Image 1 (cartoon, rainbow, N blue to C red):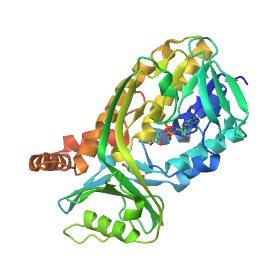
Image 2: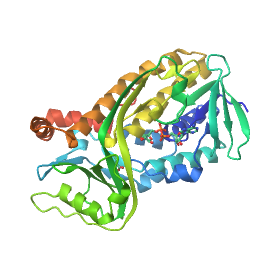
Image 3: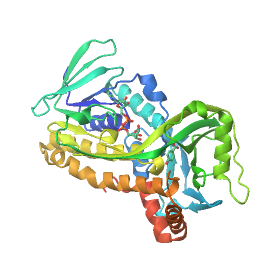
Image 4: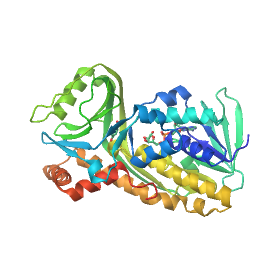
Length: 391
Ligand code: APR
Ligand code: PHB
């Protein structure tokens, strides 16, 4: 088999890249380890930056989003029993918060690729890369029936997430990693929305986040020990803990309901430099991971592949490889900005095991500053709704 760009991974990075390349007339093949059903059914985060929403609309995959997403003006920060609304639309000159689950974005991208005749292989295994320094690198893999295949490409895009193999083919890479000593227990529950915006709470008992999916389904999170077993978290305990953490002095009432999905995720900050070796380019979680508190994961993956698609377009349409040569350097500034913002939100909002009294005082001082200072709130808002794609 032969293609121009061989893409490993059908997450947001790989699928959006394939979609953007197709719009420029560049051929790609996407190889995904999981089944289509598993990709479309895996529950992840759900906040889209302002420019990502525009991009999905402008490139023809925003129709269902416009019908089904939830649009908010800002977020609430809650601490010491009080809520403080950060009006992002006012602070950023009109940019709001869009909540549309990641797997819904993936469903829309998969449907669009298949409708336009795109080639996606689900259920592949044993992916190995070869010839990265030559003109025709190749990907060896087994298809869903276990048959060995080889895909010969001009370029390979490693969009295979934090656990994927692509990154390991970059020799002399430098990796930066921090594990956080807590994780998030996430639930989907049948209940009405808690508020017309997301609520991020810093409470003595730990962080909690109230997010939403639809008018009938809510997505809530609790800070837990990352080694906790889900069996330790029966539904009643989850509701008791959520209610205790989001309580306010003026009697905020959280409505509960049947929980139909639960998971626990670990949190890390991770960056791999560089993001290129020969004809291999890595993007998204394969190159960098953020803790979910800043809601940046999908958005940062999208910013990478916008740059990568533009670099491939320049190569194929103008025989100019400048964009490809500078890809990693071009990504670095935004990657570190998003990494820092995600670390900032995480450390401001969670209880850190082993923290001392002075750490808590510092945290509260930062929260007070964000909700009282226009300049500070504006900085948080600018980062949260998303810096422009070229930043
Ligand atoms: N072969 C083929 N596919 C693979 C392999 C492999 N060896 N290893 C991993 N994959 C696939 C995974 O199954 C997954 O579908 O690559 C895809 C990577 O997707 P994500 O992990 O979602 O990463 P990315 O597309 O970079 O998106 C980043 O998505 O998962 C969130 O938290 C993440 O929000 C962030 C964003
Ligand atoms: C979500 O809705 O899943 C969500 C929202 C905000 C975050 C993380 C996740 O910061």
